[in-house]
Amino acid sequence: MAEGNGTSTPIETDAVIIGAGPCGLFAVFELGLLDIKAHVIDILDRPGGQCAELYPEKPIYDIPGLPVVTGQGLTDSLMAQIKPFGATFHYSQRVDQLAKLEDGRFRLKTDLGTEFIAKVVVVAAGGGSFTPKRPPLAGIEAYEGTSVFYSVRRMDDFRDKDVLVVGGGDSALDWTLNLQPVARSLTLLHRRDDFRGAPHSVEQMRALVRDGKIALLIGQMTALKGGNANLSAITVKTKDGETDVAANRLLPFFGLTMKLGPVADWGLNLNENLVLVDTEKFETNTPGIFAIGDINWYPGKLKLILSGFHEAALMAQAAHKIVYPGKKLLFQYTTSSSSLQKKLGVS
Image (tube, rainbow, N blue to C red; front, side):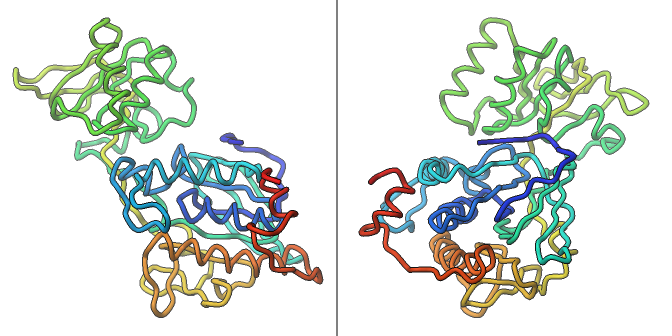
């Protein structure tokens, strides 16, 4: 289940997982086996984290039992695996605030105003927050948030607007296809007539071009035109020279960089911008806050997805003691436990 909008009433849950990459997704599974309900928050607009966003079609060869799998394929499999546990996903949001309450729980707040109260927090944010790369255009900062957007949080912000989408990957293609029905006009701009996105999306885009429903330009942006934080046009350089494209909404998808972001302000012990954890529970210096995957550090750390899966399993065992204090945890195997199989819907 996915949710995206802010809420005025805090959402109370057992666990909040920050990051919907492979490690965050597998944490849902390990927690779910122990009857720990989770909400998952990610700054991207879809699950998979870096794995799905930066190399969705790149083959991965070191996932146990899978000789080869793509980043998107792994994400899809993990989403299917955790389906029985009904985690709620909150996309296109960044956790900006985290504080410990007097009763030992944690209050979290995102940049969209969504608030959570959780017994445990699992930081699975990979290399940190994804930050969109800003196009090298003079004065672009003045238009950000009103005419220039790096993600789509509300499609209505683009309804009946003249939209210029820039990029050649999955994000650019997906939003070209999704926004075309609501935009007044839509132009897709890429520096070359070769796209990195899914072949099916490329075919759909080219069909819209053939039908005259969108325009495709091959070139680069050189200048922005407008005033009072509102765009009116964008100058584009093509092989035929410069031309102005009417646009009051700009969506540039120039890739992402990763920064530790607000995590650095939560009072967690750090080692070179990574969160220090123990190797028994993968808990931080703040009891109840865990860190798994690429965001953490401990002696001998290997930045491998399979290592993050191992960390998620041990984290869940420790989280159970916090969520269910005084309740004995009986270790069970999914191969032989009828109660675990019932939770998975396979008994």
